[in-house]
Length: 467
Image 1 (cartoon, helix red, strand yellow):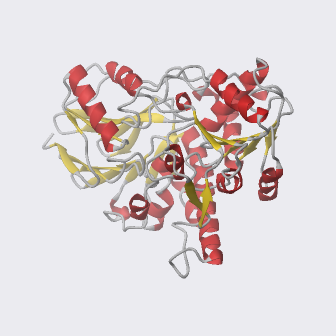
Image 2 (image 1 turned 60 degrees about the horizontal axis):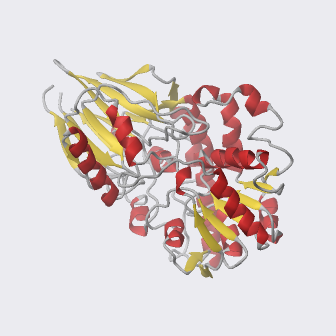
């Protein structure tokens, strides 16, 4: 059996994760994500898929974030009809994320047509809600550490990755005529001191490794962020403003809720309204009760009226669009958490439109901001940001807390790899901007003597011949 890989995404960038594994004539796809950030990357979502989706026998998902699952409706629309393998928690989150993604795409296309800021006379969404719903019957779920039959001579095992609820690293075992080989895809590796989720688990035997490198060149200490979070909130309240926090609906929002509860319990911040303005984040948070095996919180902790999900009377879950818009009239002493985390779409946009020009307010960035996103441009100090076709001045204060990221930093990536007992034949550093991916490749080579490569988009590599 010959084994090849083609990098259809997340090569030299942190988005669009897609790894095509070719086993003679069989084809499997590990992850199926959207490109996000820079316009040339986003346009790749509109390009014809590099192969006919009908040729793909199965898709294996590491987790539910859109840069790993968000292209699925398009793949199905273009002819894919095989199974999509993932954990049960990932399947539930995928349904939420894809429906939300499709709805936002439909709304954005309609708004662009109404306002006339699209260069297309009749702008169309990448996919619709109906397209997203056609993905759901194809989802096939499994438990952690369960060996799963994928196709002839290929099995998969899912290991906890600690990144978000249900996130995994995936081990594909390929059974050749005389040999068996293990291909390991790290997915997104979480933090070892994460307050809610269990720490990541490393497969011990690896023949070829595909490892994320989001923070491959950076140390991002996971110090307790509560004091810094409290100081930013208090400073903003003292000058009569509100704190706006863009946050991923899955993972980051729940951690923020946890830390804010801690700050309130310790009397570090005053009693004030906390708005969770993301229906998807609200629904995702409720899944923590259903999928309790993936996190450290007990059933009692979640269900108790003073839990991190429903603490005090401070928390206001904003479900309707009208209620979301009404938050713009609140001028002081409120905390607003909304999606998307990199400010590429969602309700966060109208909050930005209204609050970026307010000098009393603070925009707090708490996660990775990919190249080309509004979040990256704001973090790098741009003075005007385009929203709804108009340039909005950035007058509010911008603060950043790095330690809240759900991605392992360089030290944690090295810790994760230290549990691998065998030297991989080859290690690919993926899911990182080139600077970070190259840095991690060099560090792995220096630390372990591993043979490392940093692939580019559409690169193809023969992994094994005649096994």
